[in-house]
Image (tube, rainbow, N blue to C red; front, side):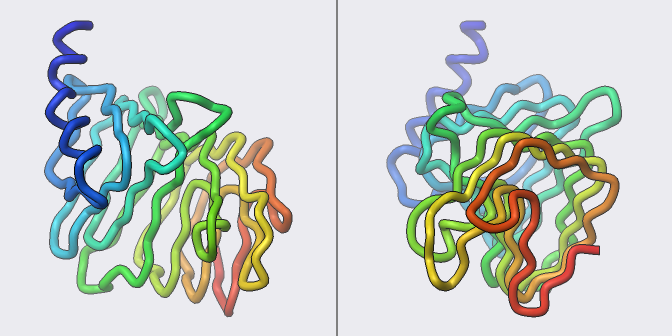
Length: 198
C-alpha cells in the first residue's frame, strides 16, 4: 500500500497546482488506483490508454477530465475499468468532450463502470454527469455500466442527463446498463440539438 501511495504523490501535487493538468500515456493495472484532484486534460494529438482493471478515483467534486485528444479505456468482461469518486456523496465532475478535434482517432470505452459523477455549475457543466459531448461524435461506449450519476441543476440551455449528455453529438452506445441515475430531465441519456445515441 505504501508503494502505491508514494507513487501518486507527484501526480497529486501536479494535478492540484494547475487548472488543467495534461495527461497521456498508459495508466497500468500495476499503478492502480489513480487518485485525481482538480481538472485534467488529454491534449489534442495525444492519447491516454487505461488498462483493464484500473481504478480511477476522483478526490473531489471539482475533479474532471477534458478530452481534446483520444482516450482508450477498454476493460474486459471479468476485469472492468472503474471511474468513481472518493466520496460518493460529493462525487466527481465527469469526462468532457467539448469541441474535441475530429482529427484524433476514435475514443473508446468498453467494460467501464462510471459511478457517482455529479454535473453541477453553469451550462454545460450542469448536464451529463458521467460523460458530456458537445460537437463531437467520434467515440464509442460498449458494455459499460452507469450507476448513481446525477444532474440536478436547472439551466435554460439544458437541465438533464444524469449519465450522458449530448449536444450535436452522435456517438455509438451499445450493450450498456444504466441504473439509479437521476436528473431534472433524462436520468440516463439526453440528446440535444439533433444528437443521436445509436
